[in-house]
Structure formats: structure tokens, C-alpha cells
Length: 316
Image (cartoon, rainbow, N blue to C red; front, side, top):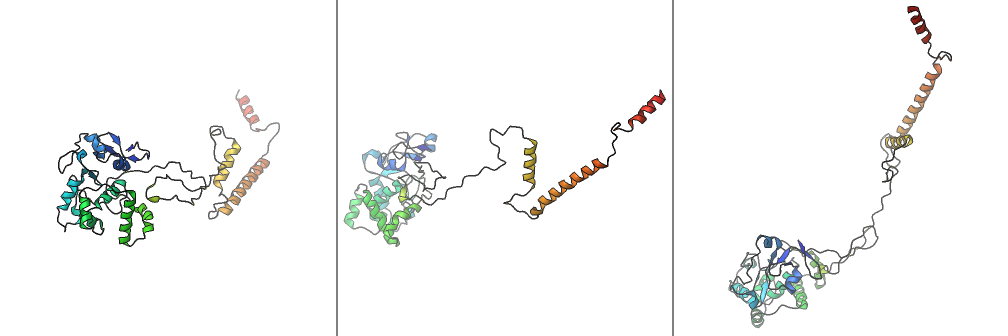
């Protein structure tokens, strides 16, 4: 994983073999349209590359190129002629990448700049429009697209999505909201969005997200703040952690741990306190009775001492 150096500052694992930098999909479309780009792990395993079209074995810089969702790049004229030569009865899954056999048509739920650019490019030829589920063009428009029409503007991208949504019976206004659910599914797209501002869960405000989120994602409001945890009476601060506890503190802690708290009422817990108090009172009474019944001589508290002395004197 690396950080792209573009202003969007996106995290990606794709690596440009020619410039030796991490690139996100936005940079693939704008700044690296003809570069050899694969994962950073593949570059670590083998950094050798050959910037040629694998269909005609010519340099990619000689003509207009197209990048598939697997990030392999080919000449648009070579790829278009190769796929146009296939039978018209070929299923959409039959149109595959010459290098890795990945399907040419991106999944409908895939949202990425590379996929959008590819859809806009394929929408100019009839053999691709059939695979994308779009109505066919006239022969003149089809020939213009086959001759190498440039990539469409962002307005054309929206027209493409509107036509697809209208065919599915989806309102055009809902296409932006539905684009949130068009996540990458099975393709090596790994652009990760990083929020520009930290999220404070203790503020009673809405969560702020980056303005560059894809698909018009809106900030979610209404998050409830988390209540601050109140310190309990038994909590030891750092200053008092290693201080010697007094006897009263130990008794107080034992008393609170033994008796149920006011918030937690267990079965029979109401009478437990009274039993403990009654036991203490009985113990005190018994102790006082034992002391009062003991016969103590003030002059000779240990009465048997004189008898022992007499025995010792008699022996001597």
C-alpha cells in the first residue's frame, strides 16, 4: 500500500512501472493513460516491463490506447478490431483481455474512473454497446467510434448512466444515490478513501467527510454523543494508586463489595444487609458478656502464679 502524490492523496496498491510511483485510478486516467501499471507486489517480484501493445507488439505511444479494468493497456484500434472480428453471437463474457482473460465489460456495480473511461470508450461501437445493454448506433456513428474517437467528457459519462438507468426502469435522479452501492466486485480496484478531518464522537454534530467522496455520498447526521463515563467511588487515580490504604478504606471497600448496590437488586439482597448488621451486634454482645463474667483479681490477675511459686519453694 502506498499514497498517491496527486492532490487527492489516495491510498492505493497500484504502481506505475515506468515512473516508479504509486498511482490511484484518477491518475491512471489523467496522468498515466499509456503507462504499464500493476500492483506494487508484482513490481517487487519482477520490475521488468515492455511498453508495447500485446496485440500488435508495437509501442503504446504510437496511437490511442484503452485501459481495461485489469489495468492492461492496448491500442484502441487493435483491441477494437480484435473484438469486432468475433461472431455477433458471442456472449459478453466471451470478450476477454488478451493478457489475463479478464472480461472486457466492467460490472454494472463497479464505480471507478478507469471503468467509467472504459464504458465511455466502449459506448462508441455497436459490438460493445450490445454487451453493455445499450441501444445500437447507426452505421456512421459506429464507424466513427471504430476509427478512434477520443474519450468523452464528463457530460457524456452522465448521459451514459442516464441511458442505462432509464433502460432498467430507474429514475434518472436516483442514479447518483445508487452509485454509492456500485462497489468494486472481484476486480483489483483498491483505492481507499481517507477522511480529511478527524471524527469527534463526543460532539453532538454530524460526521464530516471528505468533499471528494465518490457517488455523492452525504454526511450522516443525527449521531448521538456518547455519555462521559462517570468515575466511580472505587476508582484509584494515578496519584493515589500506590498510597497505603487506611483500615477504614479497606472496611469501606469490603462493605461495598459485600452488599448489593442500590442499582443492582439481586434475589434476597434486601435482607442481606440486615443479616450482616445483626451478626455484628450479636458478636459484640457475646464479647461483652464473656468479659463481664470473667473473675479477675486486681492484686493477682493470674491466680495460679502463687501455687506455682509454692511448688518451686517446696522442691528447693
